[in-house]
Structures are given as C-alpha cells and as structure tokens.
Image (cartoon, rainbow, N blue to C red; front, side, top):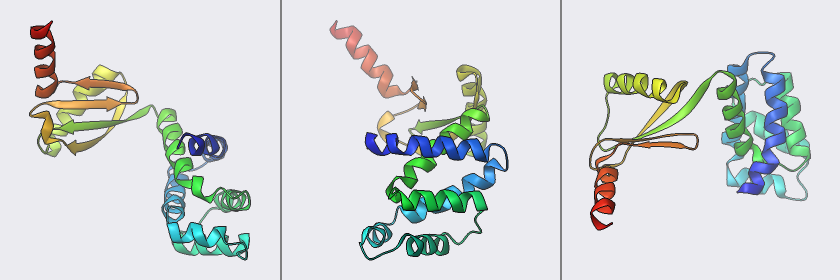
Length: 177
C-alpha cells in the first residue's frame, strides 16, 4: 500500500498544481469519477492484457466515467494509462483530496459515536471541534457501539477520545498501577 501512495504522490501534486489555477471542485469531481472506474478489477485486467492498447483503455475509462472531462484531465488520464499506473488512480484521488483540503484550510474528521447523531448534534460538535483543532472540519460520522458513550474524533494524526470506553480504560490503568 505504501508503494501505491509513493507512486501516486507526484501525480496528485502535479494534477493539483494545474487544478488550483482553475476549478478545483470540478477537477475533484472528474478525478473521483475516474478513480471509481479505475478501482474496477475487470477494467484493470483488461488494461493489463498485452493485446489491449492504451487508446482502447482510455476510451473505455472515459466512457465508463460518464462525465465530460476537461482537456487537462484527459491528458492526465492518458499519461497515467501510458505509464501503466491505472491501479494508482484511487490513491492519486485520495492524495489530491488531501492537498485540496489543505489548500482550502479544511481537514477531514472521522467522528466515531456510540449512537447515531442528528444534524443539530453534529453541527454543535463540529463547532466545538473546530475551536479545539483550530481549523475548519469536514466531519464523517461512524457509529461504533463499542465506545459505550461519547465520541472519538480523528483529524489527521490527532485523536481526541472522550468515549466512556476510553475513560474506563484510564480508570483501570490507574487502579492497577
């Protein structure tokens, strides 16, 4: 997995440098569509077949993406296919999103909650977390019943764990020390 990330980084950075001069959200949408198509195992097998040309793979991917692609995105896709890096496209998209979020001053936050959260609860929690982490957050909520109560928030490599399970673990450590 680290190898794919290493391969994807220069592609993502180059694409971001071009996209930031134009419609960043449009480029993200197109790249997401291409990454979704490139994630298909059947397509990757077709692309790896020795009798399949780069042009055939390009045409198939563009058709499957079902989106009009900007000229720059079409050139990017051709380069990826000609270099045999179609399998790295989902990793390129992930790294591109990270770069775009950083440029916009936004960070992705994974909020694990013991119970489902409604929109009002999430908005209130987001406001508190944005103050705590010092940046705008894009929260993604996951229900994790094993937390018993409370939330665990992951932003990048920072973790804020206020769950009941974490509190019980800390109490257990203190009592056995």
